[in-house]
Length: 241
Image 1: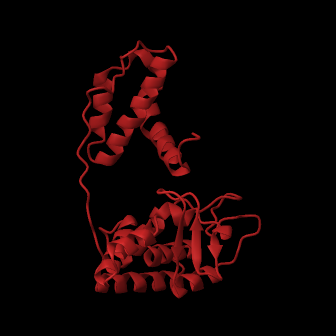
Image 2 (image 1 turned 90 degrees about the vertical axis):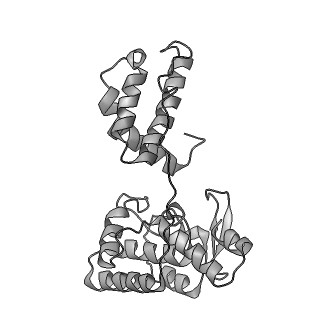
Image 3 (image 1 turned 30 degrees about the vertical axis):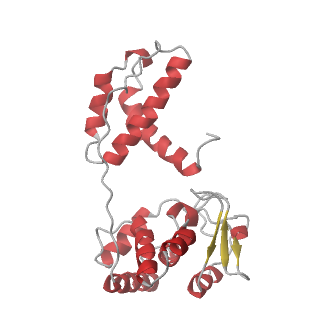
């Protein structure tokens, strides 16, 4: 675990709990065959990314089983099971769609149909181009109000500084710090950060008539807008890491 980020560890745990253990928990590790792996992989064909992450995690597990003496060497059943192609899908918001998103956020805030913390997260993501994990795990000591910057020590691409706008500063200044919790967007458990954003996002995007827009598309759109406004690829790239 020491080599993996928390988000990767959580994803591995979900695969273990929801896919691998239900299919294998009553089987001997040395009885699992390539046919078993192929069957599970095929059952996930509707979600190629998830299917391929299953292969990667299972391969690691069976390599360890060989190393620890639970399987014969070179018997990894994941070998020769081909991954599904993963097609990238670029989705950028238009000016009209940005307007609808803003209106949906304002309506959700007024009617309190979505937690305020989720609304704030979506706004910050939209206005910074940051990754979801970077904002959900944002701590107060990463925020420099005087310099209008976020210092992210554990970004996917390494430590980075994000210059933020006055709009983002206003959002952050409007959030009340929760005593004993270091995170800007606290979770339900003591000392934790907000983790389940998807339910709130589904509500927001449906009301904005943006049902095909993923949270990550907010980052794509931020980059697209920056380039459209004449910023260089270097500047935009540095701003989003």
